[in-house]
Image 1 (cartoon, rainbow, N blue to C red):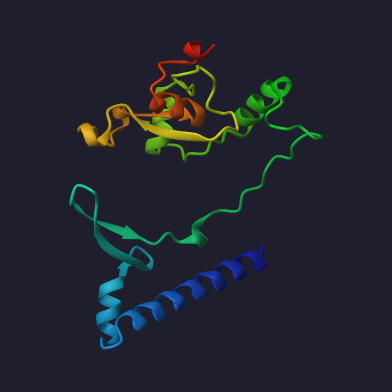
Image 2 (image 1 turned 30 degrees about the vertical axis):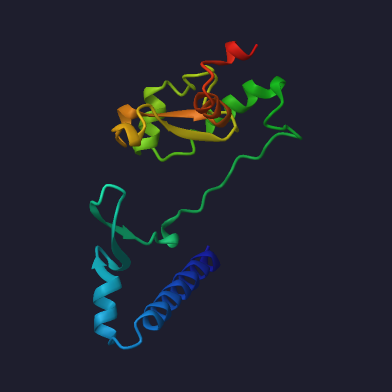
Length: 177
């Protein structure tokens, strides 16, 4: 445990050293205080690397560098034998395993977790569960270009192939069969 903590501290300090060097190289004629005020802010327990940007609608927002040391160490459940995730005979095993671990690809309470809950953890196009190992994509029901928003009500999770089906102009899988 001690070596993992030491490794994370070393990694964090290396990242901060690289960021400071980048900022000094980017602004060679500015002083240390100017650079610190521009890119580094004191929040909570310490300093954070942050900057102001504008999103696609022109609204100014702040982006903060994620602290990699805040990720807890997670132990994973070993897969039984040689169980490939795409074997149709093992779908029940993979579903139980996903439920047993209680984990999904989204954090509980996050926007994307709530979208999956609203869908009952199923793809609205094919009706299959989202727990499958297939790649998932988030789809805007009303496109942003047509006035849609990033709200939970306007988003849905789809399997990658289902998302492609929607955008290819086909109505459903039944039309292909």
